[in-house]
Image 1 (cartoon, rainbow, N blue to C red):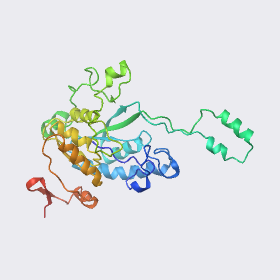
Image 2 (cartoon, one colour):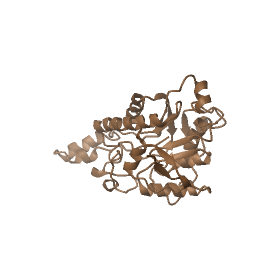
Image 3 (cartoon, rainbow, N blue to C red):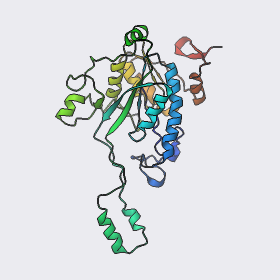
Image 4 (tube, rainbow, N blue to C red):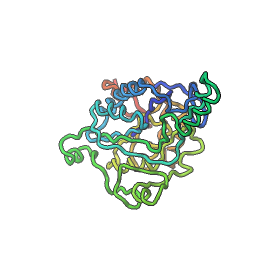
Length: 314
């Protein structure tokens, strides 16, 4: 399970934080709110990059293993196509429903003001277009693809061999309801809450030290992990660990986990969050991007040494 870069504006696989203003709303160059810039190349680049990522995830997963990946509504189709073409079976689309988000649509008044026309014409045009804005509506959901590596044999045969590939329908949602592909962490109304509400994020779960701007709700990650992992030996992999919410959820459920990120600040936050759970966590040193890529190479073999350190086998 992971939350990769969405390839919107400067948030692609090569984004530079120095080019993104550190304001509350993530305004980027040209003062466009993040997610507003429209460029067909965004989707193409996202697809090509995530196809390579998906190939490596497919390779390291056990048969029947699940791959959950967050995305934006606008480029979700590119992400899913990349995963599908890489060899995954697309099982479902989860919807994370929420009520709090920033509208991105913009008025055209500032463009009208720049027209080389008289003031009366401009005033009339503004009245004509009152309430009509650019085609970016307030987004109140986030899609999460549920993909699966093809099982070996039947579901039963695969599960008996690898202990993965089935869903735990004893996990409940809302008011003791059967697990669904719609999840809400906000109280909305009686009907929605009854069917889809999971526990709301605790004010303390993010931590005052956490500077990550898009921390996912812990209860959402717990829901997915509890739904899909059976064995205590199951390993939860997050190749874009960010603030470490997926890893915290895995640890709370007694699952093993691997988190990868190239941001030193994020890694420090992850260690702090994991250590705050009150159990010992092996303090891995920062692993550079080059070494991270080598971990995924077929020819690279690693053996475990004392104190949890990894060393490349000859």
